[in-house]
Image 1 (tube, rainbow, N blue to C red):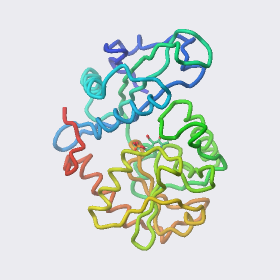
Image 2: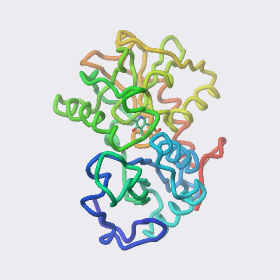
Image 3: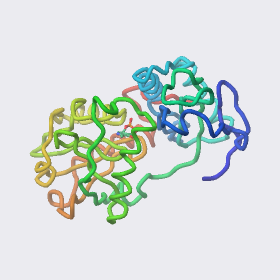
Length: 302
Ligand SMILES: Cc1ncc(COP(=O)(O)O)c(C=O)c1O
């Protein structure tokens, strides 16, 4: 990662190299962090952050589940993110806010530790490579089960939960795949290691709902609106494993992965190997993030 100028920490922009924490911080030992992944794009109409408020709202909801109230309001977090981008002279970039339990007492109980906040930005291209957006990726169904409601609630984007995602990711990469599809504790389709899933079958679009242990993705919400505006019926439903192999198209959505087709699962080719519906949706999504055409008012220009 290329070193930049500053990182925002607890209300101040500090030099990149000084943005450090104590090794006895609670987060280092017990995974007590809550984060977001947000993207800014250098659109044809100027630089803009996609769904900034929605992401900061989700961040404050993630913390609330773990009784870690955000010290900053959603509006303050949005302003801080823009200040951090500007201070680093970037236009298109990735934005990573984290709220975490810092240095205080050390034991499982986080409530005695301070709540710290940081926002970093860095330059970032296509998550799985430019080719993946056009030609799709090959994935496997993971042997690891996705975290579930009453163990690690998936609705909180909590650092500790990503140990589960790491198991799935490591396994898939070591097996030669780009990523994994994770099943929930009822063996129903949940999501990727860091992305939501959509299935196209006979012109209808299906996606697992909140009850399938998903993180309710912000790109997922945008894509559902795009798909409906294109005239597709979108159904949130439980999806059994077998449906994967019989779908006409499958695609991932996420801030990092954007709208990426899946061309095979467990070495089974999906549909005919082309992704017309996925590409129509991807094109509309790219209209927003690249051209700055924003019918849903999702861009914050700066
Ligand atoms: C586990 C998980 N699911 C889904 C998503 C997609 O969410 P979003 O579209 O808000 O980036 C992400 C990425 O943040 C994720 O980490």
